[in-house]
Image (tube, rainbow, N blue to C red):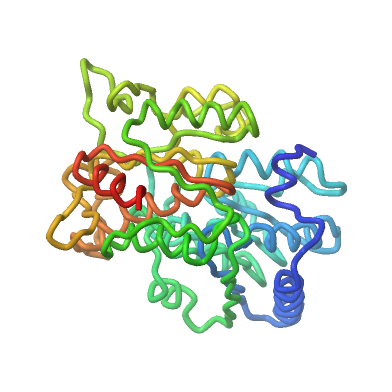
Length: 387
């Protein structure tokens, strides 16, 4: 099994909290399979809390046991590749049962297939509206999956919602579940980053537009502010040579220059990440060190060090001493698509943009290197970093 993927998704020494969580979900799954209703187990937690580790241990138990009809779905193309790689390395695992949700739903409905358990990672990426362009003509993918299985086990993080077509909040989730039985399984322990609670809170406060403060120094997590993206990149390249899996990432909004839509700032100029049909996912490809990662290639993956460039859609308000969000400068328009059933406010669009930054900052296990395109924001963060 690929060592990098194994380390992220399978942990030999599970914590007591994880063991208890798995036991409790197991009890709920077995209870649900003995009833005629369609029930939902909801694994909820923030980025880095070990949700995928818990899910994959359950996947390994049920999807290698031939007496169960099971499937694992994920609507993230890079994560889908990773799960296929993992599936090929697990004895008795049927890799064909690892699907994208649209493909599984369309196939099951056409061929009248039913399941005992369907596992869904990154369920906040399920379509909550029809998306004909992506060949999904239903109204809600969770509804369709519930109709196909006795038990659906879903992993949700409502702070990882970035687009209107994949919009989820608790109200919509419970409305979708309706009268079906469900149970919440909350995970609130940080397993990805070696950061302290205070250091994680600093990242949350930054993206929540709270007054800025110096980054806490009470943990092993390495934080560095850079005045130039060029210097940040040189340090990330050094880390990548030393420990691997270190990449530059950025949020949207960088202007086109001479026809190029690169991330360009001071001496730094690199292209955005590129979709590639090859099975190796972007985070693991060595060539991706010369590209800039986004939420579409990194959501769900661990890195060792992240070099985060806060893009032009974030500014600084000196009066409130807060980072601000400027939706007009966010160039990836997919998040602003309108839908008939929900009207989004400007504040909600700002929250989508803030969620992107929050998740990208938390990709690194051991460190975050940070800079900002906006001069005033960068200068203020640099000032605080010297305190």
